[in-house]
Image (tube, rainbow, N blue to C red):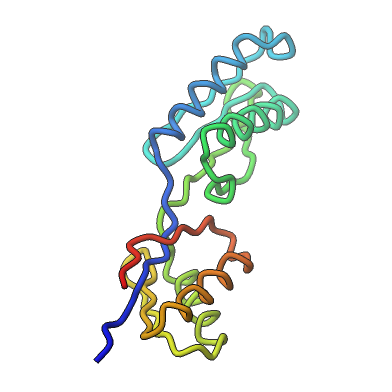
Length: 164
């Protein structure tokens, strides 16, 4: 009897790279002329990035700087979930950016449903914050990977733990 092949679908973010991107963004903001004399601060607390700025324009500029640094550090922008802009003390504004790690139950169900709609002979199951896909044929697994790469689930997906 042939042994099943499998792989895991995960959505992981390296928090050290996020921290590096935040530090580089703060360094650039400190050196840029258009931010001179403004109160712009970006901090990483756990898996949340907090951005504080004088006004919405500077907040959006700070987000642009942060995104450019994140892209350079290979932090996927899809893993950043932006909260609403809220007023803060002293006439400033703040925004919280959540770093999404892992696949939520809802997204996991969406991924499993998409895999089942392919009508391939594969099994998909949700395991904590990842989805495991198993099949008898490796070709079926490769077809599932290709389909998942083409679809947009609002997450950056990685395919790990490939076993045959």
